[in-house]
Length: 346
Ligand code: PHE
Image (tube, rainbow, N blue to C red; front, top):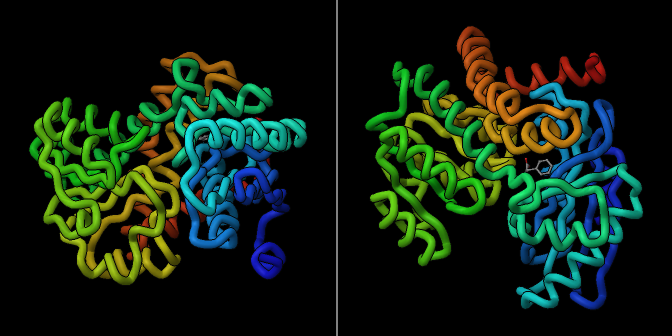
């Protein structure tokens, strides 16, 4: 852990061992160049605490790029609660309350919201102890807004790679039907896409398959399903040297953070002729919603406009990448870098 923290290009990591739950808590602040640290809190079982730390650091860097990509006055940060084993409901609640106290102690240097394993309901538990939260169920669940941005991204990618101006009739595999994947499926079905869904939770899969007439596939090999668009909407790292050679899609565009296991995976996708829409651009809708409505005082109309604009931003990124014959993620990172170099906008 020492090595990982010292070798990181971020600012600092708040670390706490929670004895009662045998859980490690990491709050990673990557960059406050554009504003105070802001990012969701992820909670899951990790094989070892160091993997939770690594996830927190990588996710926080992703948030820096995400805020810069939309030019928002927030810094990249993320909270990770690394469980050693599954916890029951009451253990989870008390752990999240203790976590809320830590967030509160940072006095706004970090504000948080939902992420994998901490849905909008559980954000409400954190909020018992701290004011520095947003994205509580009913009072600003960002999931549907993230999903809207992913749809805009898919449309931009379909235009670039398939010469299509809508999604109707396209086959789309959604891997992970949680707080983002579920509303995403609804939006895609409205647009006439042919849906294929996968999740580790069989009940969920069955429900979506029935309600939306989607086809269900096993979550493990979901990425091998022949389709137009593959949408990773769960854990990160699903695009790697094992899975990329087996993909049978033309486009990858999903909501998961850190979809690429390593930077070189972007080149591998590019070489295979698969268009990869950079995750930190296409999943920024939730972040835009949270900060747009709560900090910048935007109306829902304005938020919607900005989120639909993600499609235009991606279109520019794809064009630049095409001109340079490079992976789009390189063009997207240059865009973020320009904003970071310039500093907070007006
Ligand atoms: N965790 C989500 C994301 O990575 C939503 C979120 C954004 C939550 C910003 C809190 C703050 O975009």
